[in-house]
Length: 293
Image 1: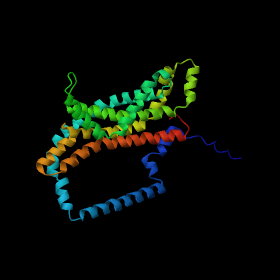
Image 2: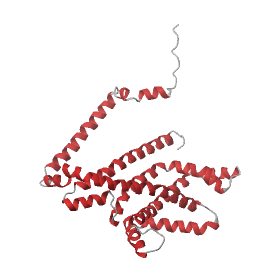
Image 3: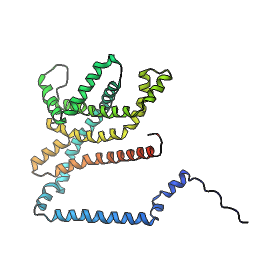
Image 4: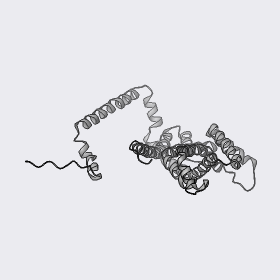
């Protein structure tokens, strides 16, 4: 009597990883066919768009005005210097935005009656700066506060433009954190209190760690929006990337500099957007598998 085959064993991580390698995946006929169809359709669509655009009457004029290689090289150094200012504004503003947003969210999630004035302030703050356009906030603070000539505070448009971005973005970030706190089930807080933790300790050690982990993807989306919003400070005069592009375009009557500035912003925002998509997909996979988010 022949021996029975050994029982099937669960695949380990190494075997799963081997199955997901590019070499193994390309041996799947269905996957190869799908990839070829996707490639062919992309070539047809984008090739057709390129043919339609290049066949228009004004294409040569647009090419000279927006895609001139000589102007690209000439404008790049100044725009790159301005883009460093955009990055500096972003690096300074983002930690402050996260801190203010988290503080506002915790205040709004508090339940004590003694904190009602703070909760009311947080609600008014959030509604005000979420409702007002960012550009109007920048113009109001950037031109209004320096005009007051208050001793002891900086009066440069760059500082108040950055403050305006912080105030506006922190209102959105506060709602993101508040949504994350709301996803933590009330039983978590009740269990923490049953173990002897105070309300503050339950928020700090039980609720906030889970809430922050769950809002990482939308927070990264806010990073993408903030990097683009730094360009709005150009209306106040600081020589960031957009302002440098405007100056070059007005001096040389060529708008390739705007393309240069756009490419610099895209070089940061696209990787951030793809990383956000990765975290969202991973979070969704964990949720579908019943694991921790």
